[in-house]
Amino acid sequence: MKSDKTAPVDGPHKELFADGGLSGEGRLKAGKRHGKWTFYYKNVGIKAVGKYIDGELDGYWEWWRENGRQLQAGAFACGKQVGWWRRFYESGQPWDEGEYANGMKIGEWKVYEKTGALKNSKTFKPKTSLAMPTKPSPRGSTTRTSPATTVDAYMKALEHPHKASIQELRELVLSVDPRIKEQVKWNAPSFYLEDNFATLRVQPEPILQLVLHSGSKRNAHPKKFELLDPQSLLKWPAKDRCVVTFSSSIEVSQHKAAIKRMITDWIRQL
Image (cartoon, rainbow, N blue to C red; front, top):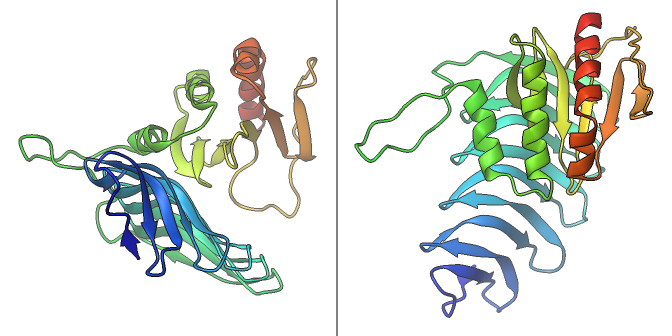
């Protein structure tokens, strides 16, 4: 792989294979990859899409195999893996999934057979501090960050046509109850009390959905939730899971009161 030597230090930039074929394209800032980048296989097809901040992988990334099926997906913060990650077999079936914090596996990781059946699971306990990585301040000091800052880093790196609405929904959920906390899970802002109960689905763009659910652990006999929905905002893929889809920022603002009431009622039924 080689860089296009005619490319400027700032602005659009292309990277080439030895034969001159396009291997990657994006933008440079002060000579470093910055913003959205797309990488390609030598023969055909997209290999990876994601974002950089000052040369470091940041935000949501996706990789594909040469056959076009997804290989893996997950998020970065300051170049280290964070949040929910998932890998896939060539058939498209899930291979494994779990959570990272500061580049280390944490919590329960599940591995699946090629048939989709659960093969095994393992719980990882962090061996060191899971504070998010930070860059030195001008005086050379560093500070630790909280789980909320993890979402702040995610939002900073996010490029999405509804970014303002995503932030608006994030603030709305947190305003419902002072006990609510947030984290990056399933490659998106998620909200929890004792367990996760709400997630903002923002991929693939331009999708924006608020998903209310009963947690990260599957229940063989899920509880049935009930919500008042006079405006018919909800879709119910399962009796313990409902989805609100937004097509514009105006819809988010119009339905804030209804959404807040639904979240309040959902929490009461957890």
